[in-house]
Image (cartoon, rainbow, N blue to C red; front, side, top):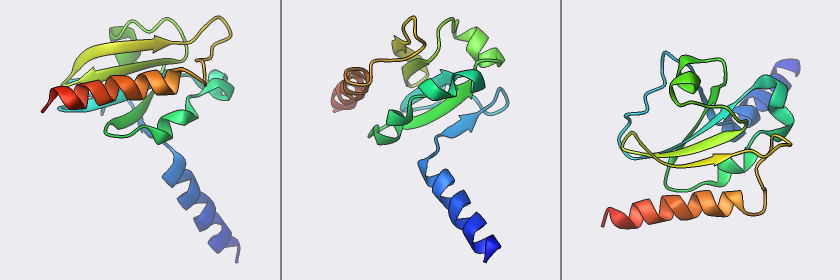
Length: 121
């Protein structure tokens, strides 16, 4: 019975979680629309869980303590970047409380993705 509970917890965590990247598997030259959240463990209460609802883009999370964060000049947490075919299109950065506006930012991110998708037609 204990194993069954552990399996359900792991499945639930896997379904809801974003793919976590490292320097080994981060590739900002990926084809298509990609959304990357740069975050830190100590900032977990302000993580962008709303990214789970983003449509028409691959969504990833990468830690602040990586070369990828340095290469992308991440200075504020959280930072969400929308890439299109490896090119940074739009950057959303947290405010002084280390958070992004939960009412507006998800809409702005999705709007940016929608515009990119429409441009492909």
